[in-house]
Image (cartoon, rainbow, N blue to C red; front, side, top):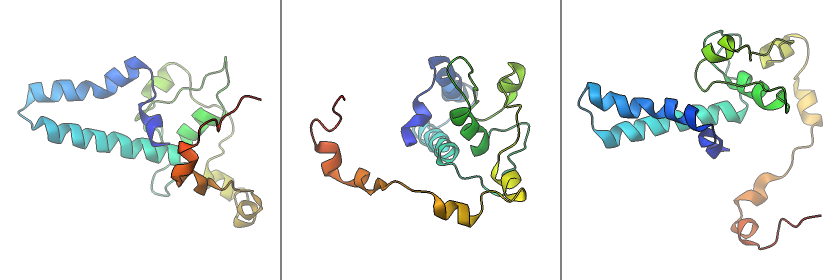
Length: 148
């Protein structure tokens, strides 16, 4: 979900947007270009974090940068009363406040080395048909979400 990138706490959003405030004070910049580049950078990284794809060139065992694996843990393992926060770019705050995952590594690389996440396992999964989401009728119908 691309808009999950902007659904954070206000303080986190302020910290993320602070370069837009301070960079023009340090050097003359085209503000429109700065906002577009910053937006593309954040939305691209945010979509990568949420897409669930662990890129082979980005090590999920890194201790400095958050990856799609760390963000996956943030969504899957966190429960009410047991938050597993996840920084947007870096792990420093997660390390300082003890909110890092300390359990067994379930990243794609480690799982595949244990014989898990094979193609046969993927083929057994029942994948929902999301194609209805791109049809205008789905979004324009009234009363589609009725209470049980």
